[in-house]
Length: 65
Image (tube, rainbow, N blue to C red):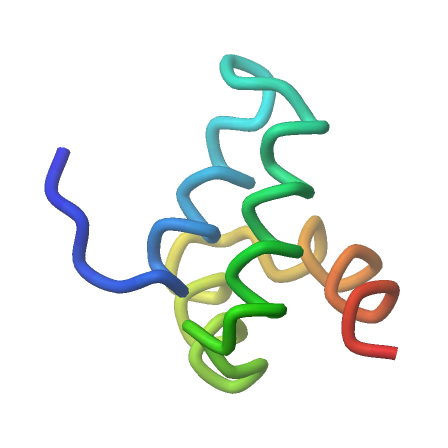
């Protein structure tokens, strides 16, 4: 699997959260957000593309504020 961007990688983590674990997925989101490797708009774009928008929404709201 290729790494396209941090936002795409986080969206893919949510897509495969059952295989890698929810804790790893949330930590990936927190780390990418804190280090400013992604914006909410970028993540939202990739979340909709991966059909994970409804899954990511509560986690994104918790991390962003």
